[in-house]
Length: 392
Image 1: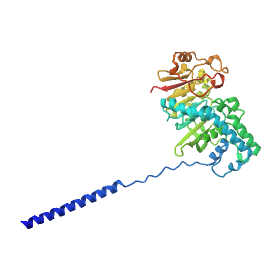
Image 2: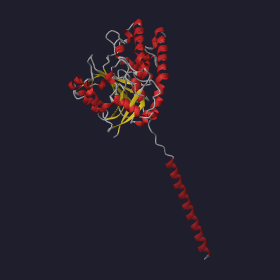
Image 3: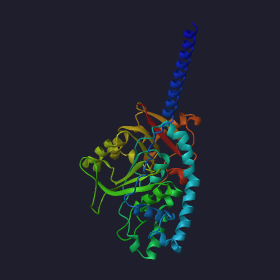
């Protein structure tokens, strides 16, 4: 009996040792699995088709080059040093008087009220990518349309120092209205930025893209085919440009500018334009300093493109006349105080219905925007803006 008991004890002890060893071994295996790390490849920055786009943009914007090239060799020249000083002053004025305040107001009052990830459609824009980006920085695409001319840039390396000096002075001069008044004056644009066969608004896009921290990935001259599709154009008399760019280095965005007459006669004769706007899908619309053209009966087709598949419209009183806004489809948000249009435009642009709406809306429900924007900036400093948001 003693032998049996002793043997049983030894067997039990051996069994416990085996169980303990097996449990410890399993624990070690679990720890090894927890510590296993899966390597994730970091995203690669988007490459530019040509660095010449950005070198030229930096030169025009008055910003120092990032590598050694033709433009960097000009940075010791007095004309370029003067250009830098003046461009920095111009940009600081823009930031202090308007742009920084727009950013703060936008984040509190505009972005929360709209879907800001939609493409932006900006008719009657001129070269104003500047305000398009500041109000809608998250738009994946910017579609600007106006009558201003667009051509390729001069061959700067073939220009004399005197020609470069004059060209940069014209460029700075062309910025005077958009920085001081927040909009371009067509009459002034017709005389600015002329150098032989080269004129137009393309250099302004270069400046705005560079100064807002964008890098140009590609630039193509384009035209519109009969289906409303943008095609790369090799014709010297192209009607638009498409710029692909990035702000963070990894996300591609696009900016298109089309030179197009938005009057009814032209739109009815060129149905491809409406097809193109329809292809944009759901969109936001921005209207500013639009010369009250959309008040006219002769811009009915343009109004259709604005209202079609639109999520929101932010504008001043020079955009859509209030009588055309279907309030069963759009919520109306008012800003500022209504006042008659500036003296450059006749009494036919006075909107009695909009004036009455402002009058019966309590002041606290139509807050002032804290920055100057639009025609009233200089004339009477009384601003009014409207935000129409789709009820869908």
